[in-house]
Image 1 (cartoon, rainbow, N blue to C red):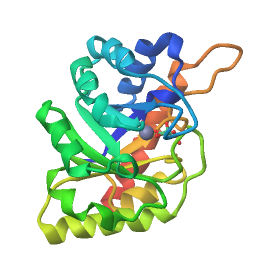
Image 2: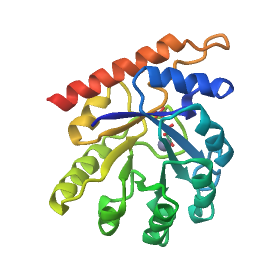
Image 3: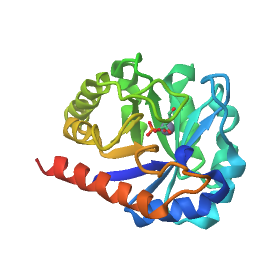
Image 4: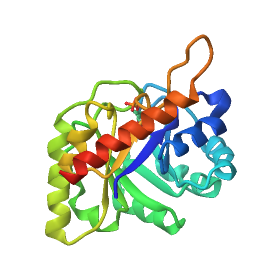
Length: 230
Ligand code: DX5
Ligand code: ZN
């Protein structure tokens, strides 16, 4: 099943609850929460308090993408705040297996993320324990960046490995996934599509147009489904 995981990084934080319901009305089924610490990535965003605030305002699963050093120290807090899925970067986990197990021990779905320069082969041993693998198609840190096509081969390779190993983890892709790139990621085999700036309408004179956001999501999913049926 193809799903749109809309990234609230591109939303209007002053009206977060409305933005989430608008994206949901457009067909989004996962809330993608980009957590940045200013160390692993140059940007700082939000942490467990925002996850906690989101929890009562939506029934959709909260997909927490931790772009932070030392995720082990914060996993219990994100779990308590209401995270349904937590993904950690391979690049910061010295003991990746242990970290994924820690997530699972908190009854949260564990996932692993790889940066554009990190090979898929570094994940083979942990594939049986993840709910999904997140392939970054930009260098993490900011929304609105240009899609890196090198992600496509990695997605296809993961789909191949999944088949060969008889597993059923999902394949998520994140960064620059928009109306012009969504077909290629779906054709490669991705089924959890993160999109931020392609979904949330930009601010014009301090206001956002929810109808535009909803339309963006509907259109995005239409293109994704068409590519999946090919
Ligand atoms: C980038 C984040 C992404 C980002 C995607 O570091 O992990 O989730 O919000 O934004 P767009 O869709 O605008 O590339
Ligand atoms: Zn993300």
